[in-house]
Length: 228
Image (tube, rainbow, N blue to C red; front, side):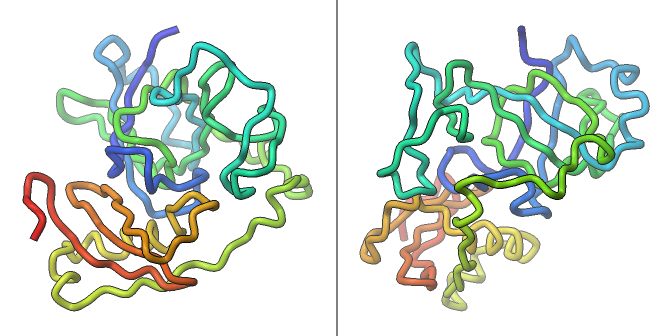
C-alpha cells in the first residue's frame, strides 16, 4: 500500500493532539492528495456526506516488534490492557482510524481537490491510506458499550493567561487554542504542578503548567524567535 494523501494540521509534534477524533469539533485540517491521486473523479459524490472515515498510519510510532499488552495513558500508565482493547499507536500494524466532519472540497488550484475537514486527531503530514464515507445508518451504534473508557470522563481545565501574553495569540486562533489546552494535553500519569510543558500549535509554542483544574500560560513564542 502507499499513501493517497497527507493531512495538514496545526500540530507539528505529537504532544497536544486531541486524544480522539471529534473531541475538538472545530479543529480544522486539510487533506491534500498525492499527485497520482489528484483526480476530481475520485471524490465525485463525496461532498454529499457530512462525515468521512480516514485510515492512516502512525508514522511516528513504528516498531520492529509488538506487544500483546500496552499501558493506556488514560489509565495512568500503570495498568496493562490487550493491545486490541485500546487505541494505542503501538500496534502490530500502525494503522489509525478517525471520523472527521467534511466541511468542503476545494477543486481550485494545483493541489485540488483538497478536503477541508474538522475534528481530526492527527499530526501534521500524517499519511492517509484511504478515505471512506461515514454512513450513519450503519456506522452509528448509540447503545454501544465504551468498556474501561466510560470511567475516564474529565472536567475541562480553566485557562489563565495574562493580557500581555494573550496579545501574542492571533485573535482568530484563541478559541481553538483554548479548546486544545482545556482538554489537558499532558499524559494522565503526569501531575507535577511545578513542571513546565511546551505545546507547539500552528506557528506558536505555548509553555504552561497545570495546578489542579488551572492551566497557567507562562510564555508564548513564535517559531524562529528566541525565548523572551
